[in-house]
Amino acid sequence: MITYRLANISDVDKLVELRINQLKDEGAIETLELKPYLKEYYTTNLNNKSFISYLAIDNDEIIATSGLTITHKPPYYKCPTGKIGLLSSMYTNPNYRRQGIARHLLDLIIGIAKENGCGIIHITASDMGVKLYEAYGFSHNNNFMQYFIK
Image (cartoon, rainbow, N blue to C red; front, side, top):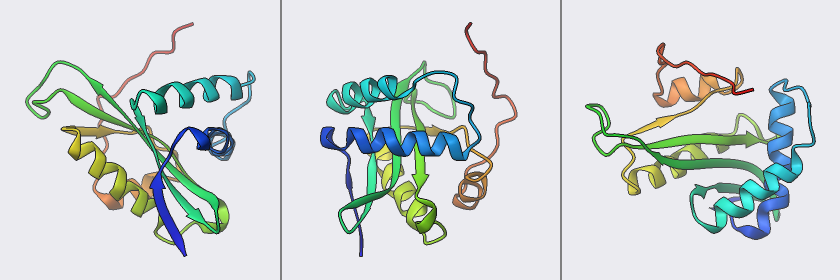
């Protein structure tokens, strides 16, 4: 039976492992040793509660993750609180996909976003995740742009 719980500091190593798996599944090219950066990120941000993650667990093994970072910007008409949830780290072990686990994690993490007053949730979706997010009700924003700082 699959259970769900919030991540804590003892889960950092597994969060790092699953994030690396996610990036590889998405076709990311390893250009540096990312593990120490991920470990620092998860440790710092789980401790100060600026990163919230729900986990799916089967037989004491973490098999799926979700993540939410809440950020603020000046309020605007569609988001009067100015609070934006940045969804990340959505990953399910390939042996557990297409069983509704990611959707349940999404329900839980969106509940946390609502509790924290977020008016909108953003995600940069992988090709694999787009169908899940579209089915859930996410829409594409053609205005989104990014700039990589060199």
